[in-house]
Length: 286
Image (cartoon, rainbow, N blue to C red; front, side, top):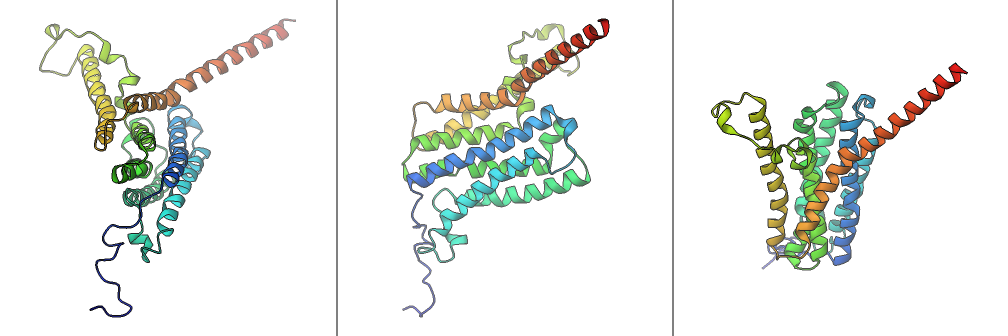
């Protein structure tokens, strides 16, 4: 017997029967999520290349980052709101399969963003490894990974949309890369360098050859984990052609854009500066 006005405990929302995200809904999330990643990439690029121009929290790079977050968060909340017919308390029970962790990611990202604002405005801008190990940046990155991998978890639940699942896990690997660039095998030649441990002190850490070898080993292991874990997440559903290529290419592209592309820009600026100085000398000589 039930009492009027009181919902039974075993409702569809409680039983996890809220309808799953449709293929178009997952596809739109895959389209919106890269805007969040693009903002993170631009902010990482700024920290690595134009740190001297950053004066606080309110920068164009943060504008791109939080605009991407706003779009991803709005779509995730909309998915839950659309299911309010099945879950009147949609903000708690209305998340489609795979998107509840995305909602948790939004909360972590919001907290991390507020902490990052306080950090930048009171302590200053993080430089080098400080940016990697900043607590606010760690919260932002964990939250971002949970958000962009929502379609992957949706694929786990429904079995539909392998391409969307692969795109989602690739975005997740790229998002994780931003805090692991200091130990990326794509950033150092150390894993390819020969090392003769006989000539050095095998029990000590001193000596450049040994430090290079340790850097090579750590970067190789961490990068292998970064590429392998996403593939294991894919295999949780089923092996999919192209998954390894997508994840590896995504991580390599992220590193290339963040560090290699500005180098070419810097060389062009240097050449323009040389030409200007040459014209200035010529005009003075004439």
